[in-house]
Image (cartoon, rainbow, N blue to C red; front, top):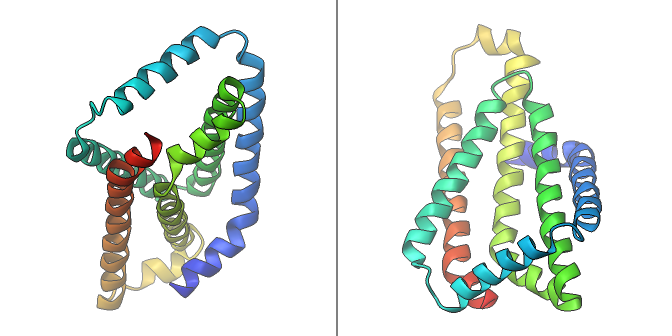
Length: 196
């Protein structure tokens, strides 16, 4: 756990730069394309706000969908970190997240003004706090795996994995899965009421 926190602090500059590049690109794109796709954005926002306000969403199925999506997302991060491109993928992924969040926030702000900022905040609270924690924790653990595979290869190949390493891996995986489940619970049961 201590090494994971240290790893996050050490890599945070690169992660923050990647995220901010994505944020900037998303804001610029939203502001340029806004005038060309106003009708599509309006119909998309109207469709989802009507569905949510009419409570057409089955919360249990919604949670299963979100949990499955998060597990797939975390598995993709893990698999890429087993390759030499793992660290590059992590930066690109954080850039993509920054881009998509900036795009959503910009579109809502352009459509609704100051109310759009409130709508965006309502759409990501409180589950996004847990999502950021699980994402940073997963990224830090995956970067440790990447470092062991590609930087400490002699130490890794010379020794067999001990029972303590196996326990640590199992505990970390269970913790990540629990956080992903908790985030999906918050998004499907709590966030829906806040967003409405």
